[in-house]
Length: 115
Image (cartoon, rainbow, N blue to C red):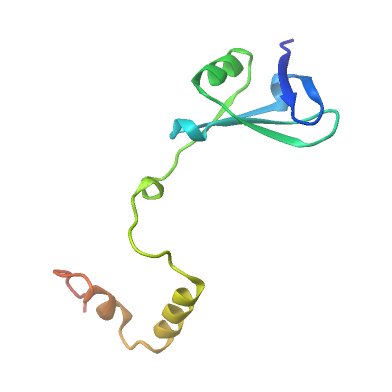
């Protein structure tokens, strides 16, 4: 059986089986990671997994979980973040709006209002 050597920040070197390691490979390479529960202190340890680590762990029998980051998460956003009060104001506005769809589409130039 394959033995995978890793290190716990508290306990030092530990030996693991492939079943004890979780490998998450992300479409954003810098977000890929592997994790395991230390057999000595029971802490969850999570570390970055570059391409070389991914290859090594897969070669050792660790299955990779694929994680696809939605394109929207990678978009640039301008302006201040939406605050809790903004959401609350919008929810209160929706309660009293006669035709929310018409009001919202009028905010986009060229949008057609469905009747």
